[in-house]
Length: 339
Ligand SMILES: [Zn+2]
Image 1 (cartoon, rainbow, N blue to C red):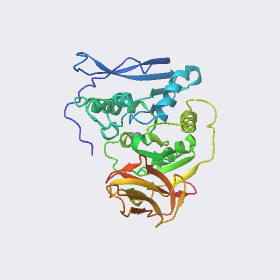
Image 2 (image 1 turned 45 degrees about the vertical axis):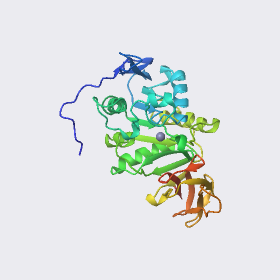
Image 3 (image 1 turned 60 degrees about the horizontal axis):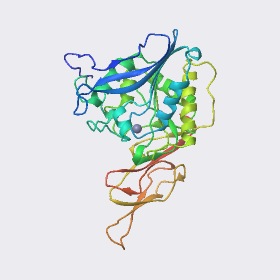
Image 4 (image 1 turned 135 degrees about the horizontal axis):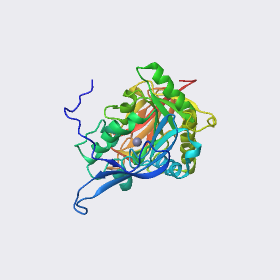
């Protein structure tokens, strides 16, 4: 059940683009942000709308977390190159949703430490991050038929490159989500479970009945030619799949993976130095040691061994060389014929 605020205040965010006008518009979502160095200042979130005639609307986002780069690279590029003549319907592009976090190169906002992907449905009278969430919740998501939100591992995780959707109660909606994942045609396609789905943009979009696709495309706080290529091809494939851009999606081989239960996650119960024992994509059997954590306070200490609970492949790993108790150390996904 949704708990609604008694009075729905209007969003303080003002858009400089008109979502109903044909053509290409580059502008901003302007969020008033009064502060020491700018009394009547604003956060200016770049946005592009490309529209021609009637048709479905795609909402494309990156930078939900500010240290994940394939989405912003692909979407700044798409915003510059997508012409209205090639579109039937509407494409709304926000390459860096949590813009303060994106500019700081951090997962969360430097203004309020807000994790945008844990802030939904947001609040029009909340923090800067909550105001961004509220604008997407009440203004942008309702416009969309299909939603693609790019993620990668950021500075603390690294993933196999995959597009993903979630198991949903509405099986017809779930089927449409996985058809869009297949159309994205990343090297891997995942049925994903979340450690904590409360407050996620994913959940907000799915609860509105939207076709929702997310990604994890490597990580480590950077990007590569290979993963940026996957993102660029994937976003065009989703637009083609939605019928917004004509032509068939450029298909490629994908390997279907599943996260069947929370057993797929391994969390560190020690602080120390990570020794990876398998690499991303390597096959693992239940009981195999996938990583060791070496104590670093003194020499002569025995490392803690972390074993896989499942047969599958290593789908994600902690990224920096040092780990803390509670960090996600590894994710093992099972290999499926087809979801
Ligand atoms: Zn993310």
